[in-house]
Length: 102
Image 1 (cartoon, one colour):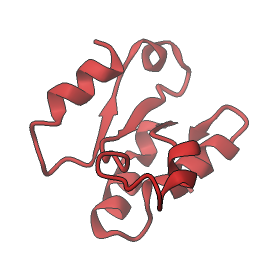
Image 2 (cartoon, rainbow, N blue to C red):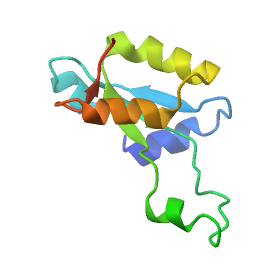
Image 3 (cartoon, rainbow, N blue to C red):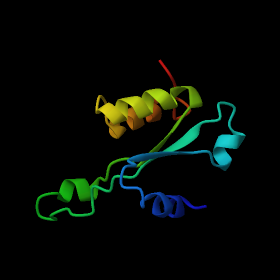
Image 4 (cartoon, one colour):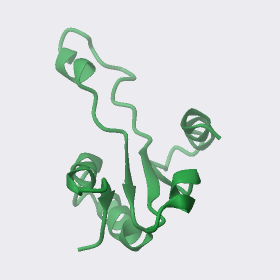
C-alpha cells in the first residue's frame, strides 16, 4: 500500500492519531525501523490569512523508530507529554534518521 492508502484506510478510526507501519524499508533495515505516520492534518481547516507560515513550512508527518521505542512514542503521545514534532526532531537528529530508546 502507499502511504496515502494507509492514511485513507485508518482515517475511519477517529481515535487514531498515529500509526506504526512495517514497510519494505523496515524489513530491510538492521534495526527493523518502523515508519511512524502522524494522522492529524493541521491543514484541513486553516485560515490562509493567519496560518501562511504553517502552510509554507508544513510540520513533519513521518519518522522512523526502532520497535523498542514504540511504547515510549505511543505512551507519551497518548498522555500529551510530548508531541509528534518532538519525536520527529529526535529521529531526524540521529545519523541514520531513526528514533531509538533512551
